[in-house]
Amino acid sequence: QSAQSAERDAMMGRKQLRETERAELSREEFLQGLHCSVHLSRVSSTRAEHFPRSFELLNKTNQFNTTGRRWTEAQIAAFFDAGGCCYVFHVEDKFTRYGLVGVILYQAGEFRQFAMSCRVLGLEIETSVIAEILRREEALRHGGDFSAVVIATEANMVCRDIYLRCGFVQDPSDPHRFLRPGGGAEPIAAHLALEYADA
Image 1 (cartoon, rainbow, N blue to C red):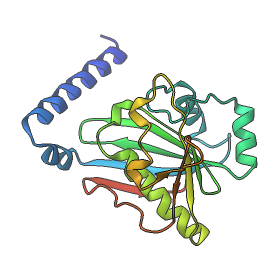
Image 2: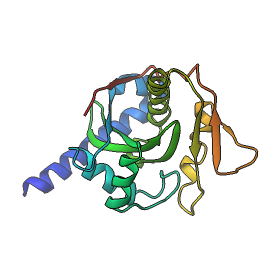
Image 3: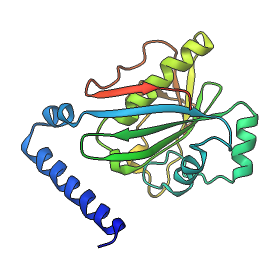
Image 4: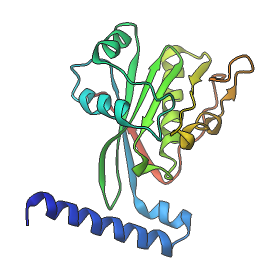
């Protein structure tokens, strides 16, 4: 048996254990017992260590992708040059190390695009990460309002309400835009250990 197939078998075994536990416990007990940790960092260069994986995630993810836009490396480099950045996050729990599973393009108070692996859906990670970014960016900017962009695609039903769940409201003049005044970000989910570190 190759190392790759052995790892795949081990991963399937861990997944089965996780699903057994999910079925036997209440949602609250299951989430609390996962010991899930989220490691958030910021990427602002195509030469950064986490750029290749975040770029791949952005361009391959369909279901949890708030705009569905595909980028070239030159376009992302121009986005960075204009003051934009990617917030990226790694996730692990007692069963699995998922690796880098989320990327958010952010620029001057606006959440431009959010792509995340569906493997970590249902753990309140997406809302907690946005809450942490809101807190960080509000401190960096000394206040200010925020906006976000969502463009419906055939595949992205699961993430169209993400900003509404984070205290944003739809812009009455633009159906693709969501607005949020600064202050009072939603709390990070109690079952998550979320930490930020510069990449």
